[in-house]
Image (cartoon, rainbow, N blue to C red):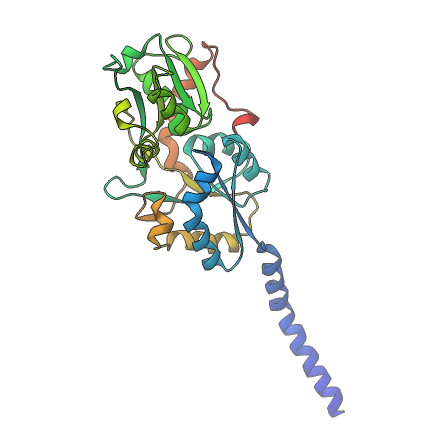
Length: 302
């Protein structure tokens, strides 16, 4: 009788513990064995991976699991990989995020904030140093280089700057797609095009590292402040794991991990942060039907 009572008590304890054990097992199953990060090819893949290595190492230590960085062949490849769950989080520019969000549920969770200017950055339009152009209007009739068709600061914002001055692509200037910010800067420095649009932070770093001769280029016009890139979760990622990742970003203090973003911290991000860019996209789309070049919004840009 005593043995029977002990077995009953033990059985009761197992039953009581089962829900907790089941929940823990579910959490373990939902938490990936590896975190895969997607980055846009703003420059060559080796350069992007080198610059982001401190952040990768920080996350690997903080989350206590392997962290892999994947650089897409183009902006479309990175955003498509996020859409179809091949990567877990991605660092997306506002335009890439906006276009992809039309097709799948994405959740932004962090963005870099910088001293003095907060969570914003600039695009810039540069010209060869000996160019006669003094304003954007002076570029009419010329060939202007841009980066990836889905790039915020490498295509869309510079096109909006030109549109704001009355210049429409393929009507008032020839649009040349070069795919990356550094390729645009080189084309301008070498006098291959009349002007080029690219990220101002990337341009400044290319000058600082000596990859572009500062004597061969000059800034014609900077853009208005652009809402910063956003770290974004893929649809369906376990909520508990999302919270682990979010806290890892918001609480990062490692200067090396923040350096590539020129950030003093990562701050929370929400969808409405990029509403200003939505207005610029709408302005370009309003005139795009009249030109030969169409903004990339289909599968190629997601």
